Length: 124
Image (tube, rainbow, N blue to C red):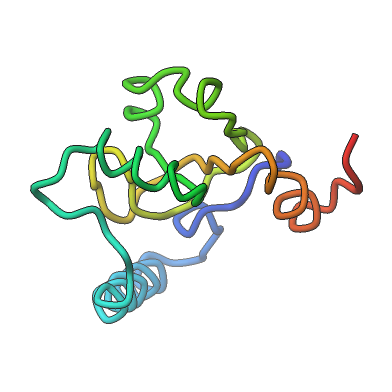
């Protein structure tokens, strides 16, 4: 196994019935906590929503399609992508719910947040 994060569906589970129960409970948990999440409004464009989060220096999460679509925005806005890990979350660009996403942090917060979580030590 590589250094990448293990997703919910990548966990080795013995038996089809047990895997279906885990998927069902994950979907039920997602549905029951959806009202607590701050999601992109359905009528707002992804670029506007992302720009609003960037102006507040909040973390941005994007699916691979949106990373390709909005290529290079993080360099202009001084954000750092975390390419080492894939997370399960909601995309800020297209609004897709419960998919694999990449996390982008503001450069001034990147080392304090991610290095401690991933155990990479101090700032290089």
